[in-house]
Length: 253
Image 1 (cartoon, rainbow, N blue to C red):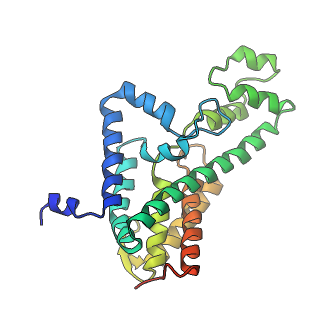
Image 2: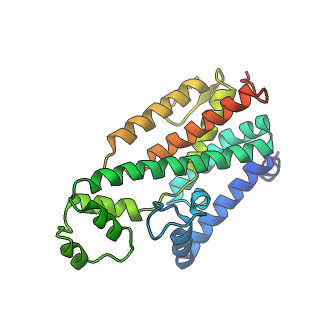
């Protein structure tokens, strides 16, 4: 069977998600000015930032930062999404995918809220500072008027939380990975890392633990939204357990 035939035989939701994500990525890469506009209006910003728009809770899932970002997400979607969609059915799979992505966004926003509250608490006029920083045109003079040194690390951290967008399908993809481990817990899979066979359930637990540890460590050099990944998995397990309890789903293999 040719690659074209294999692609055409993919289940519809997985196939169309692959097409949409790749088209958006190529368009942003080939038309940079339009790509900047797509990121400005489609990437997910913190909900009190003046750059936040409601549809970003969904649109951010179709925007990727670079080639490797979209490659690993789409490879994982193809690797696990095909089986999960054929098991759940296309309608349930689409609902599950969007729900995991939306849940990932809400969890990430919640983590940002906690971090903003922490950094703002370091200043006596933290509320006024946050009110200023949520705008996209902040000057040194405005900060000095508040009696705040613009070079304070906490100021930079707050500015980043308000104006660094979250992008990518990773939250939904982690939800799919969890679904695969839930539906086929004993199936052995081979991953790029570590390059050894392991049960799907073991792989899911391992990835969740890694994401939790990296999220807690919170290195400034790490720009990955680890808690969004965990959020996708959390919403995923809630949905799967609900479906199982209602009798519309059972673990397989």
